[in-house]
Length: 130
Image (cartoon, rainbow, N blue to C red; front, side):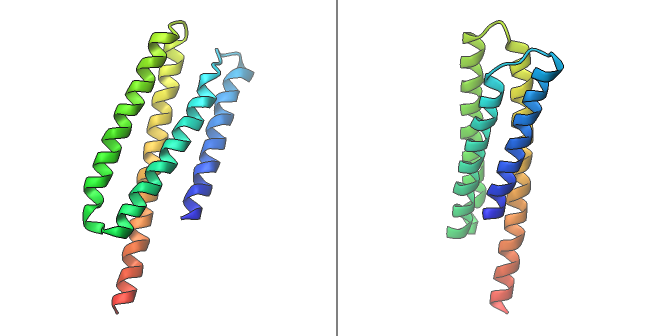
């Protein structure tokens, strides 16, 4: 489990560096872009923790927990995006593109980490049964 959080930190550091590349290349840079990276890292870490705990408690409830948490965070992301769009009208396009990139990257990361966790969990439980 610690490996997942280390990979999450590495991914977040790379995303922050990618945001700073915009500053160095002369593209419009927003302070909110690195902050959105931190936001997505925290949300993804919390989701990973909640979902893996639900797998360990009762694997049969995994799908319900995964779908519920995913839909809840999707609405949270939409709320954050909507608030930003209405409060910062000058840089809407750049932030929206970065926000969508963050969403896709962190959702892919979460899915891959959960697949790896479930495979390890099933492998350990098969060894314990034998």
